[in-house]
Length: 246
Image 1 (cartoon, rainbow, N blue to C red):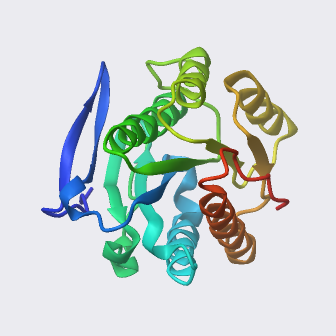
Image 2: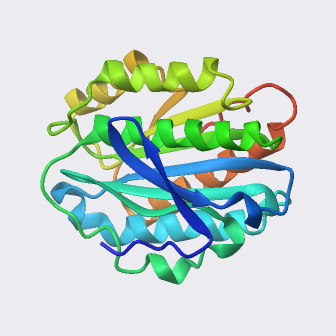
Image 3: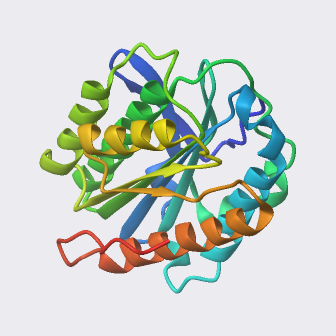
């Protein structure tokens, strides 16, 4: 799995967890940022629609580049199967080349959904605190995309819940929006499982996009980019953006 980082990023540790990387403060040109974290399932069951997922990810990044807030966005992309893989850390949007995403998401095996969710939230919170401690204004938005239930994590739903609670109450971010996304869910039991995960962990929103067709994933890309834009525009208000309808 290639790691699409560069010399502008530095490594950060998280206690007892897979760490993260992020842009060095000396390379930041704005005074406020929205941290965007996209956590994508790449377990074996995703392989039939992997290419569509990659195209959706590229579409999100491209759409964000047309946002009036483009200079105030940093994006981190994480994939997971049995393990967590940081595709790249928190990069300035201008440093994200969509062609670099081609051929990614080649994992297989099990689904460490809880571990990946916890890492995505903790990393957003930790880097947010670093920015706030250095007089930046910052909020965050985390997306977790999956087609199945957890079957390989060290952490539990409670750990994900604690990570979200700490991010919201710990003054590490002005606000945090967290969106759980079910992709290609056909069984009612699985949809209920993810809906319960959303409630028990405390995600802001759960959406089920239905089949993982190119059309549905294009619609998802539009939803994600609009959600990012809305949360970025809310920065400075002290509030999180309102949930959008898929």
